[in-house]
Length: 260
Image (cartoon, rainbow, N blue to C red; front, side, top):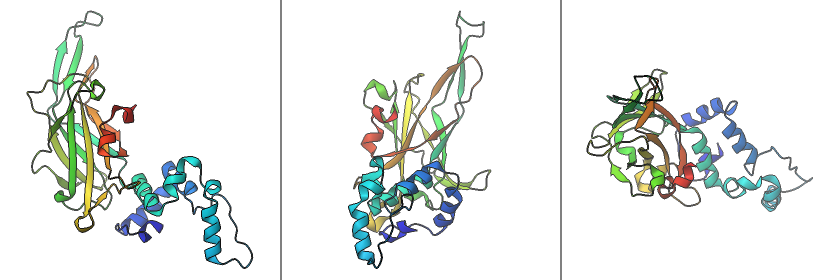
């Protein structure tokens, strides 16, 4: 793959996983159609044209060959590699509540049982990094508790991954996944607006200070998502949540505008 020729290294197994994704993943279809060297838009050789001359013509016609929304990212090989890995390595995170509490509340607008609140301050996180994750020391996880929600503009409360909870396991689908737990301290009041932001990256090469997600436009990034810690429903509903991730700098992930 072209991504392997720009100073980035990743396991050979990713090549085969990529092939499996190509026919079904619309994000990858978008990627390959808009990459500068894609053949989605015809750009023929001239008779007797040298490869170097052809390359110069390709670069001179970037605006014609690449849609405007992708022009800056996909014409740069390193940024193209980062965008490709975003599309295939990790796309979602699962959160499973641990010992969720159920509380009943009387509500005259509904039946006598009223509305029930389901609350959990501890969650197990599970995500798949394909072949990138090998050992717990790779994981760099930032967790932030927003008592009144991220849009409240109050400073978040940093929380930590539970010690020794990071492990590699095989899920029911036979896939190797990263799993760990976090817990919001019990002294913090949890309400229906409370949220936790989870931002994760993996150390790939300490000597090169290389992480996944790969840097984009020279900026270090994390993958992240946020979850609710309490829901109120008339009918029983689990606090288990399966969230798509966003790739951005840590500062951007902590900005409510990114999630709107």
